Length: 195
Image (cartoon, rainbow, N blue to C red; front, top):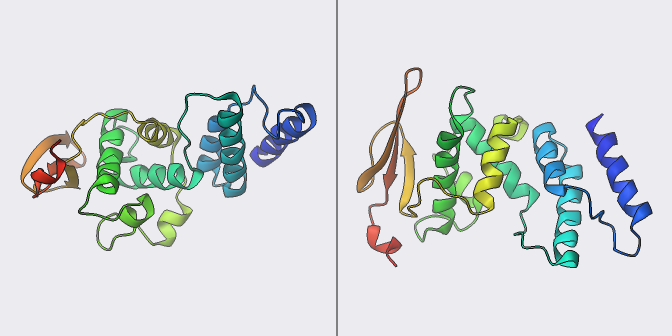
């Protein structure tokens, strides 16, 4: 059903806005991307990304491009690591922020896919589990906010997340009565993150 709704919106864009291009000025393509992540409809998500980018460029909007693949990957890893329904948005965003800090770090691969697929780092990476995972809208919203630049930890040196302390220091300690402690820790090389 979702696919037909997306196709309807895309057809409307093509029919009613030929002068503007393929996009429809009134369509929220980010919402379509988010719903496509939730449903696992990669084709609709990629098309929504293309139309969103076209709309941003044509209307000179002050929005950053966000790739469907990155939105999907970050949403899935947030869901895998902090998807429990009772965990709040801040917890989900902290987990996602650690992933993005790694992408920006000289210590780790410089792509989201590279960081997530690094051996032994993230639950379910390179598995059928992660490929089939359908993240909740809460996890997708947290990923979107992070990819738009929002931060909750506000420290790029926080590159570790585990149920034990590691690195040079503990930045944030999260506790849940069902899951126990989660330590968000700083790099062993804090000098890499100064300035």
